[in-house]
Image (cartoon, rainbow, N blue to C red; front, top):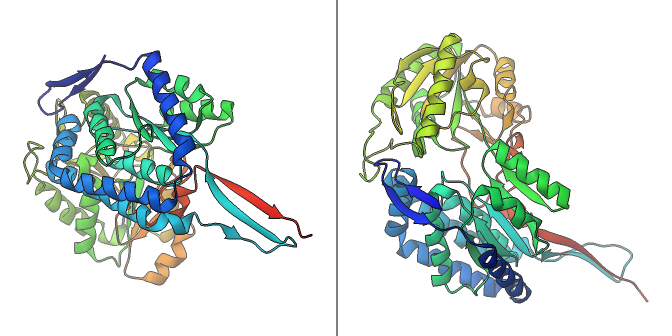
Length: 452
């Protein structure tokens, strides 16, 4: 039995009986049968369904947001924004998939030669709880637009969201078998992946989960995309606009109660503006409203599970023993963790070396550009980095020296349907979104017509 528990109240929302082998086999059969038809649909036909689900999302934003907030504690205003972003990704691929997947004619000595992008088959998605709608839609929509069918294994604590997402696809009129939710535990993922009918897998989650799935996919010679953890740096140079930079950095760290792979988790500030910046930063963090996630003006809710809050507490305590100084927050009550700021964080501290998945910000001073580059790249993660400077030539010179999958200048790292999203090192491989994302699960097929 899988339980969905409200992290704010501690109450059980609903219990879900796991799919039996018989049910799973029926879902696989439906997905395979539908794939043979769905792949023959024109891109304009698929786009109609995708536009329809975008409309379903817009018409039911409040309903879907309420479930997000109940199951993982996201403040309701942020939950609504998440659903709206899902509608955006539907619009983007409905409008742009045809161009992204059009045949690419290449001049050779043939009568005609080209590359066409054909679907692979059933694609398994394994998705996390922190953005329970967005993570699913940014994977599923381009995958479906490419002509594949989707099986989705969602995180066990957001099965209510998983159920509503499947309902949304059905309400939008998608043919039976295009998109199906699997009610299973993580232990059963490998058995689904091993099935010959499943052709590839995309996972967003932790390193252990990614390693396990990637290992099995590699053993089976099946493509995989991994979007794993991150420890993004926010680099504040002495010439930055401090007022705007502080606002952006507070948002980057504390939105979604800090539970985001692309949150800014390591704040690096040039020494000449260090004290001034820290003072302004603390002032704004103090103003963040904590409270019931159901309240529209709440910005800091609760963490999704108490064990996650306990782990964050351990990371903080260990870092304080290594010389970091706590200047704001630091207290935990069950799933609630106060917005916390720690200064003078050493590069050997756990909150510098590890991913912190919650509302704790560590601040580290640096002297030179080269030192900043070293501190950013010292991380075992490589998802994204934000740099803040008014000197765009300086920014251009620095960008190529960072190892991360994304560099944002004077802005927090964020996903955008129009741009590729993904990381390097332990943040994973492959790309979602943009034209790169829709081509992850296709067969780039060479076609050659010989001249007579």
